[in-house]
Amino acid sequence: MSTAYSVDVRIVAPVKDTEVTDRVADAVTNLFPEAETESRPGEVVATAHSMEQFSELLHRQEILDTARREFFDTLRGDTFSFGLKKQAAFQGVVNFAVGNPDELGDVEVRVTVTQPTAEAFIDHVAPPTEGGEPLADE
Image 1: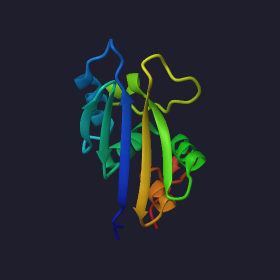
Image 2 (image 1 turned 30 degrees about the horizontal axis):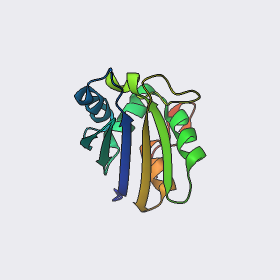
Image 3 (image 1 turned 180 degrees about the horizontal axis):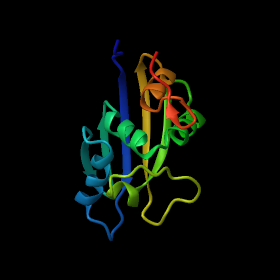
């Protein structure tokens, strides 16, 4: 049985003077293809209501445990957030920004879940694993 998720994903990517705004927008849509992007001075702001492609990338790159840790570490109520390396996003690769932001600035993602719960949505996007293999959905 598939669950309907109601989520708001807000993505903010800084655009440095040396960067092309459209290319930064591409970095965002590489990871969140359904996101609607808007260029503002010095940044690209995007909103999405799904993380299906992002979830697929987490599975493909076998970084579900890392993702879960990032999501749960920042979970406050119904919202969690995380940073992503912009350089990796240009390549369509998920690389969590941990520690010092790089000189291009990190892509900041904030996810608010209204349906059903943030925990359930995290389990959907980055399911628990055993020995590196995702556990089957119950």
